[in-house]
Length: 145
Image (cartoon, rainbow, N blue to C red):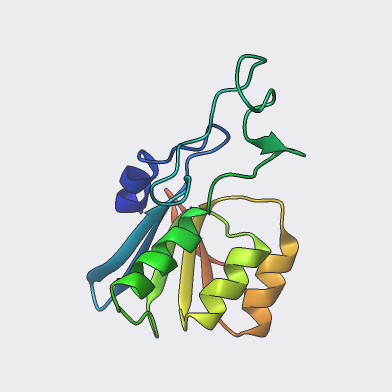
């Protein structure tokens, strides 16, 4: 989880910094953080002097950034690394869109730290029979028992 926090420091989204690490057999396969797509400008600051007066936020969400989980899975795909059977460490509970991608990538275990208000993602993990744990300083707590 420490590595996921380190990766999160590279996030370019002004709303939240999230980091993700895909690990298999004690090897890091891929990392990701939330930010703009490759080669595109980062989120602009809000203000009337910018093209988007409200910055990149719409209805409380950043419309310019990919999620850390998405970027980690895309990085693995881009370099041809299969994620089947891997563990996904992420600094925040995945949303339901990321949960669906994690399931389809063949990830078998998710360890997250911070909460995200999306109970449906946890239901998806439960239905897919993934092992899911909440990380805290006290240790790991099973989420989908």
